[in-house]
Image (tube, rainbow, N blue to C red; front, side):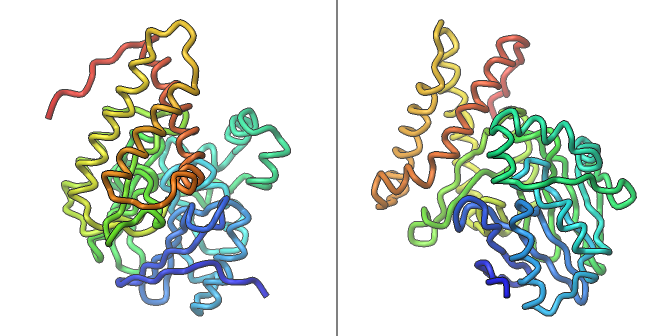
Length: 327
């Protein structure tokens, strides 16, 4: 019998399920139920599927009751399990940004891009097999798409910045937003006296700081009471985190811009500067975890953020853009 992954249940029939991605508490799959219908937000990888199916059975939700799988975007820690879930959930429709829909129907380019980074054997170890999803089961969700889960309205908002194929979900019923990666990363180990620590994710290859700022402001204009992050789970204190996110996006950009004139720009320089910045901010946050523990928690994010920032800088150098106007 499949052992249940960690589950945290919240009011308004929202549950956070650990996706078992790399380590506990790294990535979440969110379950929304309304009456006798259910939906999943993001999918983890195919290795997340047995645990989630066990959770559904534990909650007496049949596979036929799952109506929708929402992909906030198609990075594989969010979408890698989609094709496997679709085989287990016969009535589910996959709801995806128009820029990502074709990659779900024909994932060849998506797989090739990730394999180019990890290599085939490591790709298979982390993500397993990713199969095409029939186009008839895919719903493309342009900006302001409204989907009702058994009468519960879920508004999908185009929110680029982390990726151009990203949307967030506003749940009117709970005044919550499901943010994917748009509102950054927040690990529960870093909470201090009920206050979370949130920082941006700028992983390759479509980071756009101007769009990221605008997407955060758009979400906050809805006055949400809480946010559910894929990395990881529920956060509150959103006005505080909004200020922090804006400041850290600008600080990340400043770090990489300072390397623009270096003839031999080394990724290690960007990584070290990001590491120093985050450790400094965590000290201000009054986090008392040992430095080695913090670096273990953050090392993958720091590496990916550095790579994404470097790609953004190269794109900016080739095609300069006007910076965000001061607010």
